[in-house]
Length: 306
Image 1 (tube, rainbow, N blue to C red):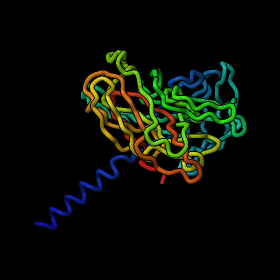
Image 2 (image 1 turned 180 degrees about the vertical axis):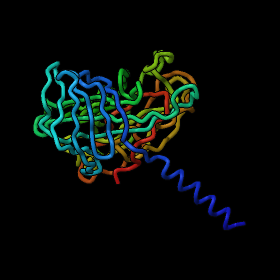
Image 3 (image 1 turned 30 degrees about the vertical axis):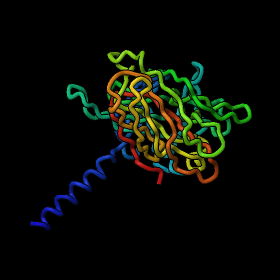
């Protein structure tokens, strides 16, 4: 009896461990990229329809590679991208992929919604960075059309001509994190999210019970910056009005994830502070690429860069 019970426990534990792994294969619709009708990703091919070229159907082979923990699609052919309303071809055959599985507590909705945020970039020119946006299935992206206001930011890093301001947290592009600006790991540094004036009935303007986070410094042409800089390991979350507060764990992954803040039960502004960090291998700057209040749970594609 004890052996049978032990087997059942082990099966349940294993299913819980592997439940977070899911495939990127699927049919995606572009959120903010009007040249494409869709992208279909199979095990080793990417198929898409290019609307600006008489609905030309294109197929390219690809392979999945990792660089410093970052996930990329490396394709056989160059990919068309759009910038400033002009179409061009990316100078790179690589696409950085950040993805999460979205689950909803509302049983009337689609319970599982997997999405991929796909990025292109020119390897040597940051200003020509190409953003394809959230490719989603079937009709919703966890980064599209979301806006948040931030205030009372304790510090931010200024590095030569670049400023890593807190407003960057609402920008789902890579290469634009908020970075605290004090010596050391930045423990206690933070910001406040305006969460009081959000219309909870609007499909994209969601409030508690989650924070949606993309951890660390995520870069297309310098993926090593994720490990070289600090990432948040624990955050202190406080309701500004209620005073309710908890210290919560954050996974060491660049993929979108949610942190449960449902202990804050009413719409109110939320204070987020760095409580602990995953140490960088070279720098002690603590970085967060994206952080907003959000309604649905998002499970990261991978739990850790390790």
